[in-house]
Length: 346
Image (cartoon, rainbow, N blue to C red; front, side, top):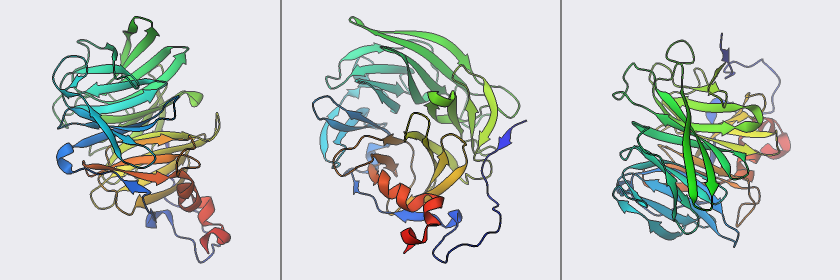
């Protein structure tokens, strides 16, 4: 039996006049929007904070077969990297991206692989060969020193086909000669409440042994939670909450065990970012951007830098640009407990 964790109905309580229900979604102004256009077909962002003061926002471009690298503090373009092809440093429809330490893990749907690049040199550390069929999203967990567990969503059947989709788990070990990559397991329920039908976005929280897998299929529209070793937990997040497609998912760790899970309800008009308590998975609030719509991937950083004292959320806008939101502003205005605080509402 699975748990329904979105609390749509609430107990009647006495509320201050300034309070707004979650269904009305606070509007938060973006700190900046990057420059670009829809022909870039931007899919997913990731953030890298380098040892020499670099703050990079790296976004995949599906149509241009390259990476756009921006200053994460300002949105200014630093450079682009890559071109269409099959060799190292070349891409064919790159989509999911994750950054851990000084490694960028990039999924390419049409090359059916993952590349791992060193940052900031962009030199190849390693790549998969021959396993993936139609990969999309990626999550990376540091397993041990210089060792990583990588989870990639894969949709092997026709789009929206009623066939179960899978998650590929790899173990990556970094050494002087490069990265060794070994397939650990392929998992995903084929029936029952934990079955995966149309999977793209994925995120991991090792502190709670949770893997968040967004199922975009029209009959589901929810987030299934698996363990890091591939077992369905029985928990489904956001049942009846997502109205269009659950998309970008990211973790904001306030401490080792506290923080938030952010998940996107992708829509061209009502594009909503939902916040859930990291520990309890209770719905904590929601917001929409003043500009950002039709969001695919998102990225979160809790590092203090530039204008972001408590970090930032980055969200793709309508395939062409990326919007940056100040995390402190999100917490101040979008979290329900703060909307109940009259001093903050005034």
